[in-house]
Length: 205
Image (cartoon, rainbow, N blue to C red; front, side, top):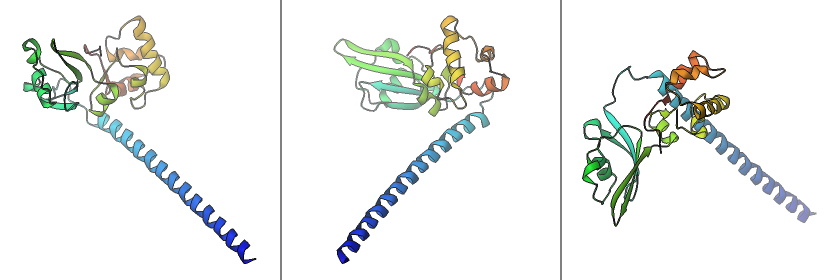
């Protein structure tokens, strides 16, 4: 009789431990979900509540540097000194940058892929990924952002993102205001999307 009671009590302890572990997993998942929601909400609010004055030129330039360097990442440079040579040096590039591109001025959103080889240093210019652009408070290009990137934009509906990609396959977008041509897109939606989209000549990765 005593043995059966001990066995029953042991089972109860195992069940209690399982329930507690399950509850902890649920709590952890809930915390992660809430944290993600707060981040997205803060991003959307910051982009809509503090717009840049029309015509204003940011004093800093944000670019991505990757490739054969020791410190790949996204760097903020002063506009006056935002050159290829400066960005490469900040990223720990030990290669010699060709003189014809060393002083080339950079603009926010650019990506530099530095390749060092026996024949010299080559740099491939492109555009930062959509997720990185949004995280830096920059805008994605309406004519090159992928469907998955467009869906990262707060309040972007899948049908609108699909229509953006389909329409530019026939004719490139000339301005963000033209999004009103899409069925279901009104002036308020266009205004929200202008915070995350632009027409950029950096439309190749």
